Image (cartoon, rainbow, N blue to C red; front, side):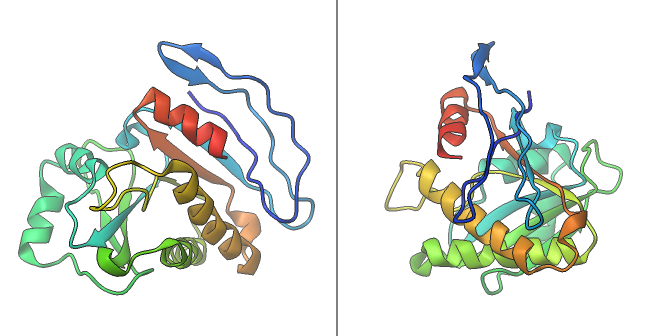
Length: 212
């Protein structure tokens, strides 16, 4: 399942989005070409399922200091036979400032992505929407400089210990605000083409579609 969706920003864009059908409980999204004239050209693909099943060369997941790893971390860790957990126990994983990346090769483990990148988002006590925007901006700038043309990710920063509900629309707004800022600033932006968002829950997938 894949759908290319328009990202709304101040520049505006012309795109036609049809009504998604439903297949096996998941929305089947129509494909839409997203264009910003000479400024930005970006594809957003929705992947209904586990992030380890995407075909992107890099998986990007966020990590708030002081919070347990996400479900995506657990899934990737299982696919890598517990290698990520062992790395964390060895102290190789570093909790640095928001916006820094810790990148690990997947080696010969049974996972398509060649690298897993953990985006540090700082302590959860000081985390807010501005931090999320700054962190995703920094992450994409780093990936573009590394000459990558796409990555797969999940909804980041949408849940905090004092709020059990996942704030899909708010998280996506500030995630993509940072991504779009990075694209506008990068001289090599023509090389970058796609962001894949993975989600296992059908209802949440529809919420992602509506938010975008």
